[in-house]
Image (cartoon, rainbow, N blue to C red; front, side):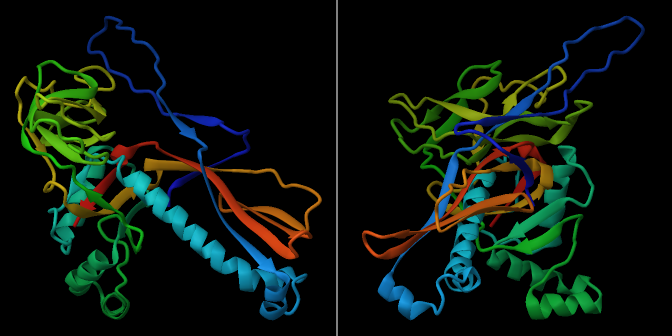
Amino acid sequence: KFNLVVQVHSVGTSIRIPKPPKFTVRSGWTRSAQDFTEDNVTLSIDTPKGVDCDFTDSELALLINNPDSISDWSKRFLKPRITRLANEIDIDLFGKASVLVPNLVGTPGTTPQTFGVLGDAMEKLDNNLAPRDNERTVIFNPKANNKMADALKGTFVQAVSEKALLRGYIPVLADFDLFMSQSVPNQTVGALGGTPLVNGGSQTGATLATDGWSNSISGLLKKGDIFTISGVFMVNPVNKQVLPDLQQFVVTADAASNGSGQSTVGIFPSIITSGATQTVSASPADNAPITVVGTASTAYAQNLAFHKDAFTMAFAKMIVPEGTDKAVQKTYDGFTMRYIRDYDTTNAKMIDRLDVYYGFAGLYPEWACRITG
């Protein structure tokens, strides 16, 4: 359900994906020029994964009737590995996606099981102007899926209620397509400690100077932790009207505190207080309290609601070498995979490999919302 970009590339290539520019609107007749600035996101092809096997002659004689039949070979030796590789990609991408998302609803430690939590996630996406075009998805872990199906079974017509009861299936709800996945990641909150505060007023940008933490904590905050700052509210991305909810920030890299309890924390979204790209109502005040979501060193499920365009990925097309027994590369629905098989005459065994090579990036992470549990 993520956006796919198919790209032929050389090693190390990065794809720059442009985002629509933002503008301010003048009032009155006096011309007020502004620069045309087009933002972009860089997607790097940087993740190779594969599953490889060796088969001795004695093993092949016992395991398969005709090693030259690619159909027989595929059923016995390829399909199970392709399934495992696909599952590994799913886990990797879900983990990469969740830590980019600053929005979160639900109560840490409480499994979501009401319509209200879906409505809250929908509200987050709406406030960030995610399109309402039937491309919104929610993915729950098995426990949350079970609780939601049980809690909502009475809200559906009989035919749908039966599926919710017998199969734990939930249809489109709150403008989302709902799915279950065992790959939903957990987020373990950093060690925290102390009473965190903003260290200096009038700060802007993608980092925040803080103090008041316990001294010398190496795992103070973890990438993916979420916090709010007292007095710093969300704004409508277009008209910049101040919204009633505090802006949630996600930590973009692990952070530690020094011997004085100070820490400079990478954040998303950046603190921008004016102009076409404004993100917050105001810069945080000096000594404004910081509240981190969750309890220190505790893991919470990160169920995810998102619009398809929140994230994007690309699979590379790789070299298909000649002179091997079998070498093929296929692209299906944007996913590219390569298979190579050959014979090792020195050791009398068949050798093969499955390869994928891909990259991932957050295009509009604000168009997603974690549903904690």
